[in-house]
Length: 404
Image (cartoon, rainbow, N blue to C red):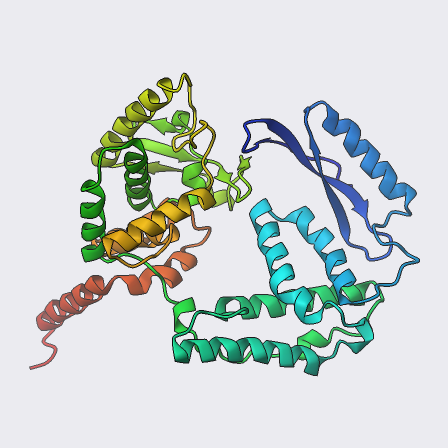
């Protein structure tokens, strides 16, 4: 019988602290599925009481979260029923992404249909239209429409899981989505890794160094250079506090992320994301100089002991959405490709690979859970290494008497 739960401390954007715990309620008597709920309290001491209340409510309701007498009027009601279980097991960012997919794609397409009217041909026609829109946009070089390439398979998979949920509840006779297939999507840009090549990196930072020495510009340049030097996800970088740096040992410890809503989560994307990254002397000197500049900036505002490495104007952790407009302006003004924040991560991998770095070390720096992810994602970003390999073979072949 599962009964343990971990209490997580979360710092909100406004600087306040709340406590969260994912609590195991029990096994659903109707579906046989383990049920959980997430509890949020202002005080850590309140978690245990609230957890006990939720477990007792679950038992009193017949050990099920399903309203046994209710029947879903349409697909939308079923979808949100599935979503309730989904949000109990996923991170805040994943939940918000799924909520967006619901709002923009799934509910407008299928929400009003009664469950007995949902058929494989209907779902197939919706999927086909999304793919058609994508292929048409790619051919005509127009902006991507709703349902562009990287979303189509995810949307289909989500519809399939929703209908499976309905089948398990006895609300639909079968999961017709399993009969649907996703046609090939010709949107090459969705599968293309976006990064800055060597020439663009040089051009970009030459532009940044030419800007005035305002704190905002120093902040931006330090953040961008740090991301390229470490390969961190932007959510990981914005979660950093100065106590995570060990300047004597030349390393930084990664153990948290900033959510899109501005909450600091003390857990990372995966276990392998909790890591220590070695820093080069140039990056160390840059970050130490930025720390001193940032300290003076906030002291002038009568704000002391700012913990965040990349703080907002009020001293709390910055949020990615607030920094994106500035990044886009810098890309445009410098005349290089807009690769977003994630492009800095890809850029570091390209630089390391072409410099001869080991894939296993790159896996560690990036926090990938598997070496396969690193190989599948980045092996094609090292054209220089491919040429080097050909040269190595040529020299070895000569010794073996290969060729003329």
